[in-house]
Figure 1 (tube, one colour):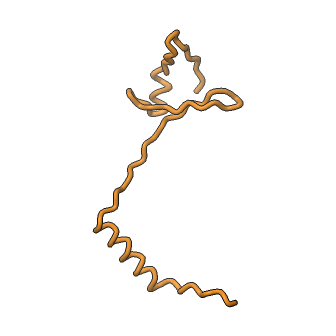
Figure 2 (cartoon, one colour):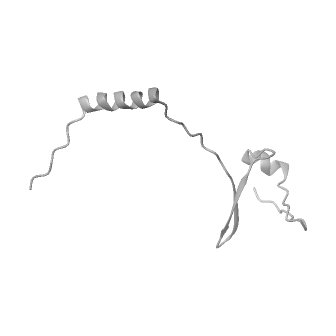
Figure 3 (cartoon, one colour):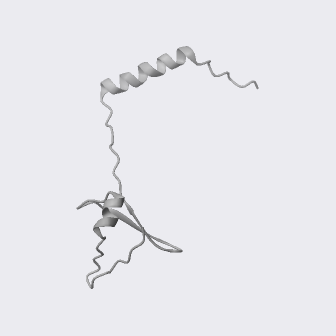
Length: 80
């Protein structure tokens, strides 16, 4: 989709509804603006969830690694 945008004297750019809808941009979403040799690139900024590991979760990782160690061959030490 190609469209023309207008920048106001305050630097505000309005994205037409059709463009916002096609990109899945909603009110209060943030965009990343990046200069490129061919112009200005605007793309949605996304936030990825972060998992904080509690003791139970760490034990689950340890147990999974122990299970893997049972089925994966041991790494051989290099000869000198």
